[in-house]
Length: 236
Image 1: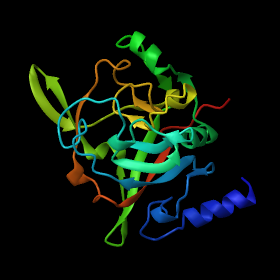
Image 2: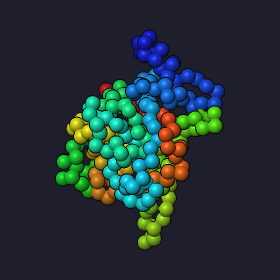
Image 3: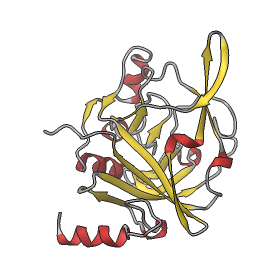
Image 4: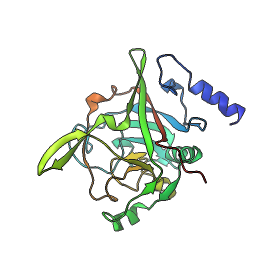
């Protein structure tokens, strides 16, 4: 790690007694911070309340992520108005950061190809964990991305509401195929973003989910989204 990068990380991730291990002042983060030593990518985001969009305080299915970027490849992203955690960082920079910390991709497809193989194929890559952290009443709070969402499943013919338990993998399709959706972590196996829930095949079926805005910080809150390997990445 260069001296310059080390200084940037030290400034962006001040160690505080009440803070998570790599928490930062959300307002201080510009772009994407890549911490290769700890294997983590972080970027600041603002909490939005995109009411009227699928799965926001309502049950539904959607391919669009709940965390995403305003820009993708230097251009306005397609789904910026769908995201609860909206970042000014470029989706391509997030992709490069995830690759730099060692995450690898095993299978990626375009959205067009994804429609052709829907229900029959899976995106594949290294597993990741996603957390959201912010300061509340002077103390840092850190929650898994999935903790803001509930899921509805059928058990023995009956609908059951349960915590959302996605299986996240880094596939990178949205940047590799220049889809410009802005999606970071999609709530189904969708090739439009960078990370997907791969419990089901591509696009079919989509989980039935409910993003509970009451569980999220107030609108306008500055947060930090952190993505890290969920296990030791494979070596080249």
